[in-house]
Length: 636
Image (tube, rainbow, N blue to C red; front, side):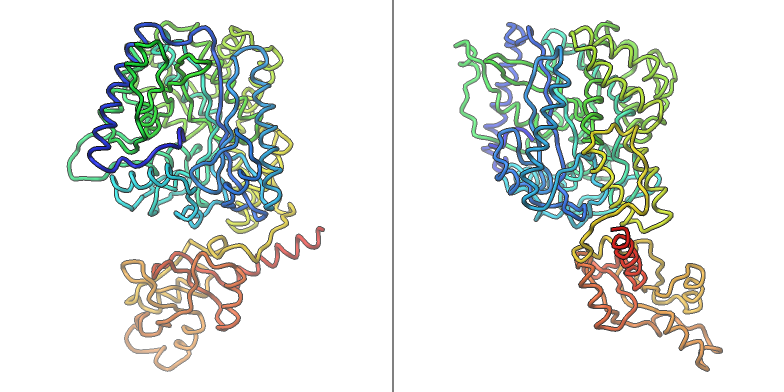
C-alpha cells in the first residue's frame, strides 16, 4: 500500500499545495532522466507477499495487528483489512540463485508469521480470494486502524458515494451492493518488482503489457467469491469495481477507472503515464511535503519525489511504474500486480520466474512490441485471460490466433528460458520453476481449475458452505507441503474437518436460492411451488424485497382441509400467511439459531438484514451439521 504517512487531501489549500509539488516532481524526474541519474548497472528483483488469516473454522480472522505485534519483524506489515497481512521481501540482484533464495525467504517469513499466529489459534493462507470469505467479513469494523486506510476509504466514498455495486458474471452471477471499498480486501496477490534500465523503460513497459495476458492465463487461481463461481481470476474484476470512483450518468463521457490496464502504448518516456494519471485522476491523498526537489538536484542529492509517489500509490495500474531509491541511487521498476497469492509458494515463484524470464527474453526477441500488436488487442487479451484462463484464445503478434496452451508451451516458455539464462540464473532454478508452469499448462490444472473441479465434485454431496470449507482446508494442507497445484488431488467428502460448529454463522449455512411469492399470489400457486421444489416453507416478500410474511406446509394443509379451501374464489397469500414470522440475522451463530428454533417451536427462520429477506435456514440445515459432526467423530 506504499508509504503510511499520508492523510486525506480534504481542503482546497492542501490539494493546491500537493498539485504544486506534483508538478515539481515531474520536472525533477524529467531532468533526472535527461541527465542520467538512474542506477542502470545493477538489475534487482523484489516482491510483496499478501496473505489471509483464518481461524480454526477456515474463516477470516481479524487479528493481523495483534499477530504482527507479537512477531515483531520489520518485513511483516499490515494490509487493508485486519484479516490480511503483507510480507515485504528483500530486493536482490537478478542473477544466479536469486529465485530459489526468494522462495526460501518467503517460506521462512511465512513460518515466522505462522508461529506468531499460533498463539491466537489462527494461521496464514496464501489464496487469491479466500473461498470462505463472507460479506459479513468486509464491514468497516475489519478495516486496519491506520490513517492511510481510513483516508483512502473516505476519499473514495467522497467521489462515488457510499454504495458499491458488484456485477460479475461467470458460471454463476454475482450482483450485490456494499457500503465500503473494503471489498478490495477480498483480494491477495504476489506482486513482483523488476528494476528497469531508464533508457529501456518504454520498450520494457510495453513488453510487460503485451505478456501480461498469457502469464495470467497460466496463473489464474481465484474463481470463487461469496460462493459464486465467476471469472477464472475474479480478483481482476473485483479490484476494479471495489475502488472505482466513477459514477453513472446519462451522458456518454469517457472516464477511466483507478484500476486500469492503461489506454495506449508508451512512446517516449515513463513520464507519459505519470502525466496521464494527473490528468485523469483526482488527488485522493496528501502527505507532509517539505522537500525542495530542484534544490536537491542542484546539490547533487537524490530527491524522494514524495508527491509523485503518493499519487501513484492511488492509481492501480496492473503493471505499475515505480520510482525508488536504493544504495543512494534512484531507480525505475515495474510492479506486476496481476499474479495471485498461492496456490503454493512454488507456484508463486514459478509465476514470477515465467514473467521475469519473458521480460528479459522478449527484450532480446523483439525490437518494438507495439509494432506487432495493437494496444486494444493486448488489453482485450488481458480481460479474456482473467475470465477464461487457459481456455483463452489469444490474438497474438501480427493478428495470429492461438490458444493459451499452445502459445505458452511452444513459444513463450522457450523465450522465458533464454531470458533467465541471459542473466545467468542457475540452471536448476530455471528447470525447477519453468517445469512447474509446463506441467500446469499441459495438465490444464491451474489453481482456478483445481478449485472448480473440487467444487463440482463436492457440491453433489454436501452443502455449498461445507464445500467451500473443505476446499479451503485442502488448500492449507497442500500449501504446507509446498506442492505445485498441478499435483494436487481433489478433496473427498469424508476429509476430516475439525470445526467448531457453534461459532459458525447463519450466513454460512442459510439457503440463498429462495423461492418466494408476493402477497397477492394465490395459495394454490404456493402449494405447487412447494410440491415442485420439495420445500415446506415459502417466504412472502413485497416488491421491494422486504419480508412481509411466511407460508408453511402446515398452514396450507389446514386451509385445503377446510370447507373454504375446496371452493370459492382464489385465496391470496396475504390472507393466510404468518404476518410476523420469527426471523434471525445473518451474523447470528448456528448455536443461536438452533436455540431460537427450539424456543419458538418453528421449523424455519427467514434470514433478514434490516427487513430485507436474504436467506432461509431450516431444521434440515441442522441435519447437515449433525451429519458432519457424527461423521467426523466416527472417523476420529
